[in-house]
Amino acid sequence: MPRALVLGGYGLIGSACMRALADAGFSVTGVGRSQRAAMMADPEADWILRDITAIKAEDWRGQLAGVDVVVNASGALQDGARDDLEAIHVQTMARLVEASAELPLRIVQISAAGVSEDASTVFFRTKARGDAVLRNSAADWVILRPTLVLSSQAYGGTALLRAGAALPLVLPQILPQALVQTVHVDDVAAAVVAAARGDIPAGTLADLTEAEARSFPDLLAQVRRWQGWAPPRFRPRMPGFLLSWLGKGADLLGHLGWRSPLRTTALQALSDGIQGDPSTWAQAGGTPCRSLEQSLAQLPSTRQERLYARAFLLLPMAIGVLSLFWCLSGMITLLEPGRAMAVLTDRALPGWVVLPVVAGGALADIALGLAILWRPWVIPAALGMVGLSLVYLLGSLVAAPDLWADPLGPMVKVLPGLALAGLVAGVMEER
Image (cartoon, rainbow, N blue to C red):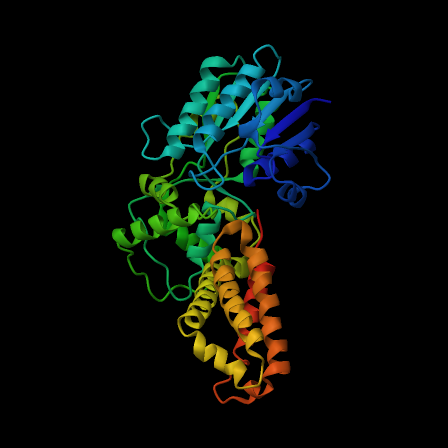
């Protein structure tokens, strides 16, 4: 049985490639750094759990023993707290090629349509350099460059499409001059299988794409119809400066671990257009990729699909509201500690208890409000908010039960915040 190693095996494209290769009779091993993500993608699959940027050439030689094909589906959109594009796209490929120099295997690289060394984004430039390393140094290679990948999974650009199309009453006219082509993820996976089997000649560099291009607003409109929403009542044109501000804000969040599809790299890629030429793939003997209409017809548009699209929009708002609420709660207490302490001293609590409770609670509020902004800490912070809210509620029943009857409802108003924190903890998930 031929063996395949898939880098980035739990990603949107990588997971599809692992399934397709297994169905085609390959013994498949995925490579990724997150055990949790790997188990969520396929708990029955064989996994190597390592950060590929930390694997040296000599380590790769051991991993590649007996492997017939390596599929590199790893990648990142932009430098951030968790990602180094040079390391992921260039250095990893250089080490992989060095390790495979004496081995009879094929490397199939999943790149991106439109990459070049003078492209407008670091993503495209590093992808191009990684492709060049493979072309110039490896003996047996195939490079596949998909356009915008559509899938039943929602991540990155596909999540942005779903969310943008699901806006209530509104369909913003974003980047009307940008032309976009798409490709179904199963077509990408089928192309990888064809390359892995040797049906595609070595040295093939081909775009994977449908033939037709359309404007980004037209693409959004088609996705909205596919989701089943009513036609929009308003189609406002989004000013370029507002889109630029959104991108810069998303870049800042990237340093907190968030991989927003609104980062400047994604917006610049959309602005430049996402297009490819299907003719090279056809000449290499590849099966034509399906059109946007065919892709959408074969992807289910369900209630879950619509709920996800709306939740994708509401989740950042919920996290922002929780952060603001908890930070302000703590800061207001610290700015006027006397008033906060009076709530307890007026109810005959001893002074040696009041100060630590008030100061500790205020500092805990601020800490949780800041922690929820750091992507790896969102779930623990949200659960901490739930726990501290319960402490406040139970403590008030013991020390100040009369607050529950206060006309302004200070204790009753804790309940919505508690529920919102629980909701965030429940819906947050890594891909």
